Each structure stands twice: as C-alpha cells, then as structure tokens.
Image 1: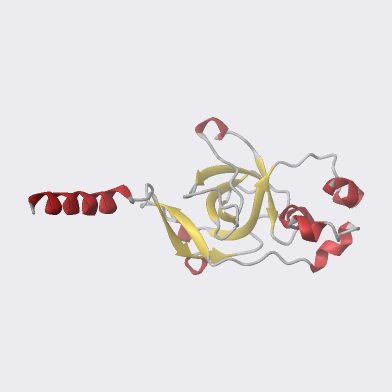
Image 2 (image 1 turned 180 degrees about the horizontal axis):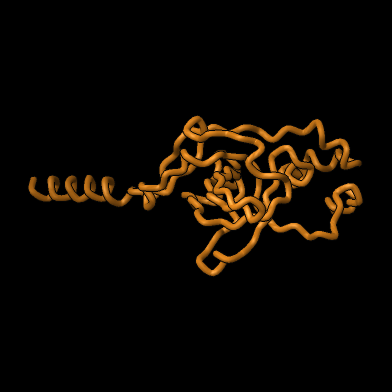
Length: 175
C-alpha cells in the first residue's frame, strides 16, 4: 500500500511541476491598437520578444514584440505570427516593420496552394491575413507594462532598399 501511495504522490508531483511552462496566452483585447503607430518599412529595434512554447508553424497565435521606432523614437507593441528569434547578440539589429495589409506581408503569408494562383502582385489586394485571438506572454517578465504602448499587427524583417515589389515576377518567386 505504501508503494502505491508513494508512486501516486511522485506522479502527482511530476504532473504539477514537470508540466510548468514559462508561457501563457492572453487575448488581443488587452492591447491598444493604432494602425498608424508604425509605417510599412519603418526601421525598428526590438527591445523585447515574448518567444513562445513552440515555433507556431500553424500560426495559431501571435508572438509579442516591443520595438522602438528609429524614425520617431516611440515604443510600440508588434504582434506577429513569425518568430525572428531575437537573441542577445541581435539586440543592436535594425529591422523593418511591415503591416498585415502590406503587399510584402501578404506575399509572405500566402500558403503554397494559394500563391500558385497569383500571377500579378496587384492580385494580392484581395488577400486578407486571418485575425488571431491569442498572444503568447512570457511569464519570466510579469512586470512588463505593455498596455501603455500602441499596438500594430504585422511582420518584422529586413528590407533591401533596391527591391520594388511591383518588379517581382511572382511566378519566378514561387519556384
């Protein structure tokens, strides 16, 4: 009988402490949205990244970034389904922000089956990225006061100044 209760207690402790996570999810309603907080292509530096429990391959939630605009100096929340894997060595990197409505983001977000039907960049204006409900929070930073910053949804990446989306041959891009 003592063996059974010992194993039961050990299993219970394993379940309680072995399944702890550094992440939880909150809803997008806890953010103040302002679509004008960042412009498409605007240079930013990432000062916080929530990371997440996985790589979000199915894009079921947003990662949370806090960035500083290199143009205005304003601090802004960015919600993105993409993980750019911010590390301490990348803290000085300057990235570009692209809103969910930009052609760049639409092109990146198209799945393989949909992109095969796009023959011209102008066809992207009908594509609308899906709106998600959940944002991952990193519990290692409970004191983070993100509600005071405006929020945008989009992606973070690098932009080469010599690329014009109107010049992209979509068929060549998908091959």
